[in-house]
Amino acid sequence: MDTAMLVDKLTQWIRQQVESAKASGLVFGLSGGLDSAVVAGLAKRAYPTSSLAVIMPCYSAAEDAEHARLVAGKFALPVYEVVLDEVYDVFLASIAAVDQTRPQQMAKANMKSRLRMVTLYYLAAQHQYLVVGSSNKSELTVGYFTKHGDVGDILPLGNLVKRQVRELARYLEVPAEIITKPPSAGLWVGQTDEEEMGVNYEDLDCFIQSGQVSPTVAQRILKLKQQSQHKRQLAPRPDF
Image (cartoon, rainbow, N blue to C red; front, side, top):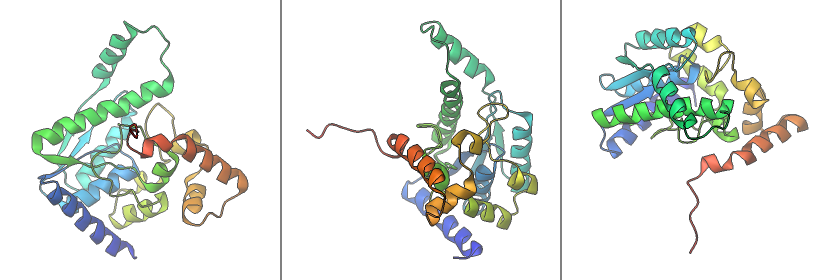
């Protein structure tokens, strides 16, 4: 399927999901990264007048918000900016008051994602919108997302590997600096997806699409997939 046809099909699919849910439009986080920029472009096509972008810095790099605003401007999207620094501090302090365990870096980072999702669902309820997640197939395969933090109501990029998302970005004319910068979830300063996963997206995409990677890389991906299985399924219930 060529890129133009894929964009059209994704746009129609998004409309169908919103109509099926009897919702009125879309709300999504705009991080300044590639995936959320593509979501923004698709949302604008699907719901030109009822798509809301939300920038949610939480001790984030200034460049992230700059790039997010660049995308919002590119697609002429209404944008809210909700600064979560103080909320994050109050939340951590409240927990520290009853639990003296030293906070783990990943636990704190995941809390940022969950605070952002709380924000999006509040706005979704206010406007009768669906929350659009930006996770792609590469990330979903290895569990590179925050449980109860990143997925949302619909995942238009969920069956596309990172390479395909990048192709969509070029077609949608996402600003070049966003397409070329190292992928990062912005969880802490200097953090990158590939360093944290221990595998690059090129190898990960090849593994998903053809399995043609080195045994070492395959082993790493399979380990990540196994460890994150709980993220890709509903909470288990007793079978009795």
